[in-house]
Image (cartoon, rainbow, N blue to C red):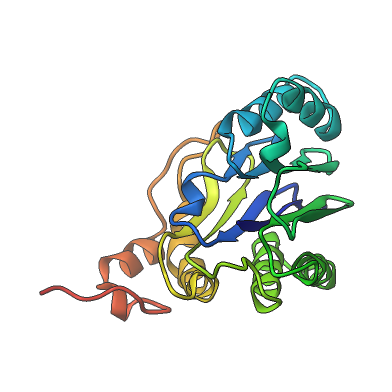
Length: 243
């Protein structure tokens, strides 16, 4: 049904999830992140409470593996679940239940877990993991996006394509980046397009938003001036003008 990657950037501590599937609005169901705690993708027959339970346990001091094992123990339908986790320390863990639809599987490495079910084959996961490793040194959002693109190019969901999501969590309680393509014939390609626009228009705005422990101030003049323009006239374009 779904292929995803969860990861932590070792240089910045950023946490993130990228996911795609042939169901609408995957970004509303599968990815979960919490500042200074971890990132999770819960999929197959989705149980959001697994993700929430894992994040609560990690926040309480458990490792990704211990938190995942505890959460799964309380789910009577765990063999239908698939879940990938990375914690704030960079430990990753994953689980693929015996009831997940083939092809299904996972790869876990240092600071990253890649998982998928109802895929065209293992090449999807292999390609994602390889793309993430090859992007070492690049920003986390770019590494996640490249991994998702590699999985899509390798075949992805065997039913087709419909939605995709990219989420990056920093130290604030709100996301540094939360992008979603809810229904599109080529959602991963569209997500890349949205990401490029967001880098030019949204990220500068988010970087100027209030932060805990920092006195709020006015938005930078350059950002204010840019956002006063109609979308097609901004860097990167996108959207439409009035009328």
